[in-house]
Length: 115
Length: 110
Image (cartoon, rainbow over all chains, first blue to last red; front, top):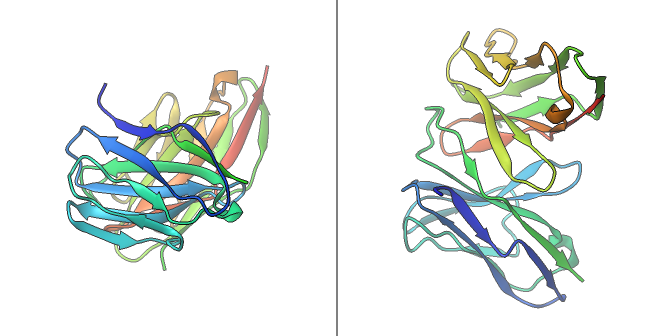
């Protein structure tokens, strides 16, 4: 089925460990982004990409790295996990941004716990 | 900067009651507006959208009208069901940036 695929669905990390959250879409969407969702704070943008080879920071980028080597994939790397990064992470993609109303397609999320 | 403000929840209603969830926005230019729904343990799903002033988005009995004069995009449904219990997010798209409200949890009791 077409859509946004995130792996893993659940992950427990120890403080200081690193890991990569995977995100792949098969809709040929140009625009991809990563959000974190915390109770009472809605969704906050971490990083986004408007196309292969182009990335930019969002609202809360510290502690995270991204790269976009292909249109399909947009992995999120946690460099040295901290308890403050315990959250649910969502990857989303869109055909384009620019007020044209395409909206986002979201993945099902990765629930990360850092102990 | 751009932002979205929506009413705090939770909102608790009885089945068949009328639903309104308020959403107002601040943005330069002419953003597109959206409502997303999130069921427990799932990602967000697009519920409806409107791309210009006075447009009405509708889906599954839900409606919202893009009101530029009041910068609002309130979500309404005439008769809610238990299956509508979820978290609802208002959002805007304004050129390379997507802004979400904090979400409103809806509980519908039988």
